[in-house]
Every structure is written in C-alpha cells, then in structure tokens.
Image 1 (cartoon, rainbow, N blue to C red):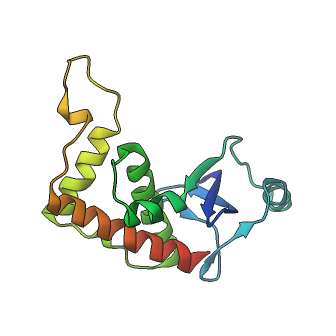
Image 2: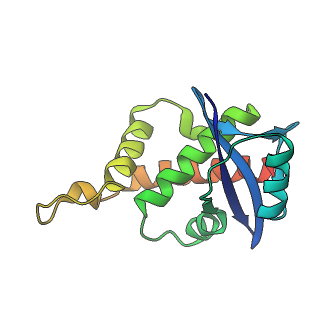
Image 3: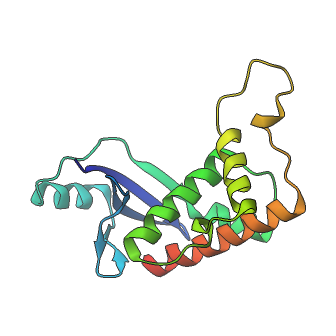
Amino acid sequence: MRAYFPFTFIVENQSYCCIWYSDSVDGFIMDADKIKHFSSMSALISYVVSQNLMIAEETTVLFVDGFTHWLEEPAEIDCEEFLMFWNVVTDLAHSSEFSFYGDHTTKILTGVYDKLFIGSQLPSKEAGNSLNAPIWDKTERLELTKVIEDGLRIIKSCL
C-alpha cells in the first residue's frame, strides 16, 4: 500500500513543498513532467485533503543549494546528506522518467554509494572506525561530483 510523505526542496532560497510516496517503487507525485509542488505546507495539506490521501506529519527537507555550493567549493562529505540526495534523485528520476547518472551500475558508483551508506550509519563503539568516516580518493570524489551535477540537473528540470 502506497504511503505519502510531505517533502520540501529548498532551491535558491525558495521552498517547493511536494509529496513523496513509498511503494514497491518510490517516487514523487507529478503534474505532467514536473513535480506537483505547493508554495506552502498548508496548500499541500489542502490538496491532500481534497484527494483523500493519508500523509505523514513530519516533513523531510532537502537543501539543494548546499549541493550547488559543494560543487563550487568541494569540502567535507556529509554521508547522510549525500546519501539522501542520491536516493531522492533516484526516486525523482523514476517519477519523471529521466536517466540518472547515479543509477548506473558500475563498480566505482556502487563503491561510492556503499561508502555513503556505511558512513551515514551510527559510529561503531571501536575508536577510530574509518568505515563511519570514509576517506575519499580523487576518483570517488569525481564520481560523486558527477552524481551531484546530474542530480541537480534533474531536480531543476522537474521543479
């Protein structure tokens, strides 16, 4: 059974309130080739009520501008944030039928995704656990840059 969740993209300091759904394949409610978005959470709730949808109370927020800034000045990689970005764009690509670079199955991309996944987990009790603070080599950073660039392209095309 499909479950619905409020989701907000923050792009260029503008909020886009959307509805993300979880099902056998996750995605976003679309309006033609664009994400159906609302200017406020109250407008989103009015839509949800009019459509008789059950929606979760807590909103997930993705600060897209932070990834744009990271491309301009690459810094530390917050595994949890980058993993969320990757997963959200995968769902958006599915909904919009865009091809997403991050969805290609290559050894290097799988390795980068796995590092993000492991790095986003709670730290181990062992001191100095490098799995939770991965070290990124140049090739991995380049692949992650491609994922972010393509993800930003998809997000901006769908809003």
